[in-house]
Image (cartoon, rainbow, N blue to C red; front, side, top):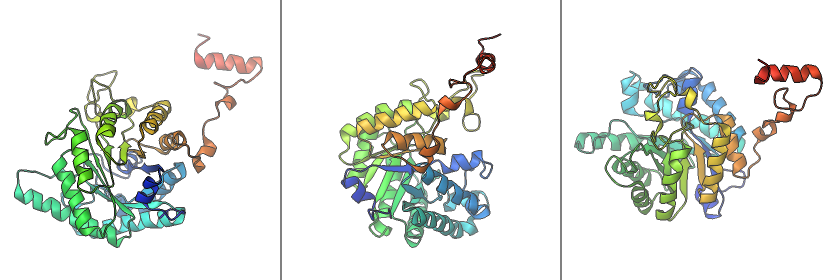
Length: 350
C-alpha cells in the first residue's frame, strides 16, 4: 500500500495516475540472467537479489507499483524447462521480494498473471489447464499479500476473460488490471476489435483495461484513442520501447534498418526509441486521459523516468536527469582547445 494508504481503485477514483514498471523479463535477459526464447523467470530462485534490485531501480525511477515477477512463472512454462517442482517456491519467492520492496518504499504490490502460450480455445483440456494455471497463481498472490492483480499480454479476449474470472473467483475481492497485446490487426486473435474486447472486460469486472506489449508508442497511441472513446473507466497503456511503424505495427515484425533481417527477439537494439519519443508518448497519453501508464518490453529506468516526469512527478532519479550544458560536446565550454576538440567530435573538421 502507498504511504497515503490508498489502494489502486481509490487512487484512480480520486483522479490520480498510476505509473507501473513492467519489462522485467526483457531487462533481466539483457543483463544476462534470463534466457531469450523460453523467457521463464527462474532468476527469482537463482538470483533473487537481481530481481530485488530491479524492483528498487524502477521505484527509484518513478514506479508506483512493484509487480511480482511471476510472468511465465506458471506450470506449463516451468514444465518446459524441467523445473515444475519449483513452481510454488518461485511464485511465493517472487511475491515476497515484491512485497518487501513495496512495504519499504510505500508503493503498491501487484500479483501477476500472463498469457499462457498453451491456450487453445477449441480444446476443452487446454481450457481446463489454463483455468488451473490461473487459479493457483491467483491463490499464491493472495497468500503473498498482493494489493491488486495485473493480468497481461493476452491476444485473445477469451483467455483474458478466463484470467479475470479466476481473479474474481479466487482473488478475495482484489481489483484487476487486464491488458491485451495488439499485434498487427486492430482486433484480438478471436476476432473481436480491441475497443469492444476491452469494454467487455470492463463489464466483466476489470478495474482497469488497456494495452501492453507488442506495439511501440507510435502504433499504440492510435488504438488507444479508439479505446478511450469506447471504454468507460480508467485505461492502461504500457508499450514496448521500440520504433514500430504503420508498416510494422508490432515489435515482433520489426526488421533491421540496415540488413532487412527480422530483428525479434535478440537483434532489436538498433530499433529502440529515443528518450524524447518516450517522453512524447507519455505526454500524449496523459492528454488522452490514460491514468494507468508504464512501459513493457525494452523498458529501462531512464525511460521510466521520462514517463514519470511527463506525468508531473519528481522521482528520486530525476535528480540525475541530463544536464547537457555541462558536456564538452553539447555545452558551452570555452577556450580554443575545447572548441577544436568539439569540432573533431561532431565532424566540423575532417
